[in-house]
Image (cartoon, rainbow, N blue to C red; front, side, top):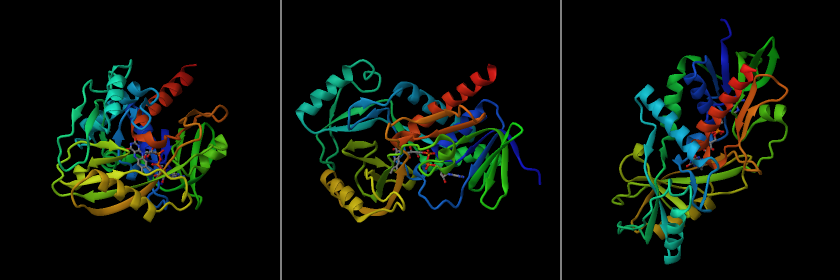
Length: 348
Ligand SMILES: Cc1cc2nc3c(=O)[nH]c(=O)nc-3n(C[C@H](O)[C@H](O)[C@H](O)COP(=O)(O)OP(=O)(O)OC[C@H]3O[C@@H](n4cnc5c(N)ncnc54)[C@H](O)[C@@H]3O)c2cc1C
């Protein structure tokens, strides 16, 4: 059988690989995808809560390029929904708990600051849900929830005919084409442009870009069932509690923790569960059942900078990695920028 040959291919199909592949497909490129079905490392994009929120609530600051990132994310999700007729994104305000009078005053001041006025509601409201021990709430308006599994599934369906299953172990550059090989030596695909989107375990990227200066962060979360809570938007009060409509009414996600240990073999821990349950009990007045406990690793770098671009010495080799805790929000914009840089290179 002939080896498939593409204009552009991605290695890795989390939020990074999916965004690059979809943005390239939208530009009319013939796009290939290498997807590893047997990876034994938890894939962050499959466990992410999926909040698309341009505000870092804990620090009351904006993600860099917040507005642009939001616009590109919403644009890509809407296009994917139109193309596949699957729902992948739920626009919804995110509510921030304002525990004290001072918090309320601070939020109101924040909402008046340049840039923030476009993201936040100008008024705060008293919590109306008697089952929640919360005081007042402020609202981020430009926010929503990406349904991670539905998103990846829909992205996969668009590219179905050019997906190669496998784990790439070695690359070679021959006559203007990148060739990707599995450990067995099988040639998986050939492509003019190859973009590495490996996430937190990135040996190929490190071969070409050197030390990525990782500051990886393990995160744990819970899936819980809380009959009668009737919460219909995500709330943040140190941790997040968000409706998980895909699982049915009264199902929620709780998370996520931040930990810097256990990165070699990431597993849910008793300490992580206790942290989340203790928080849940401090916020929710109803009994609950833990249905699932999961963990993943955020591909964050010490500099907090996303690694995106084309290699200065290896023609046609690109990367998108280091998306940290905001991959859902940032990947569509970063993928777009990568492709704009590619076109500029071709025009020279
Ligand atoms: C607990 C938790 C909660 C989070 N919540 C949110 C949130 O609410 N909102 C948000 O925006 N972000 C969130 N994030 C962050 C988000 O999940 C990450 O930023 C994003 O998933 C990173 O995507 P990625 O594609 O770079 O990496 P990954 O998701 O790790 O995907 C990399 C993929 O590449 C594959 N791969 C690697 N090497 C190869 C190879 N050689 N050959 C073939 N395939 C390969 C891997 O198997 C994997 O499938 C959360 C993360 C965690 C851990």
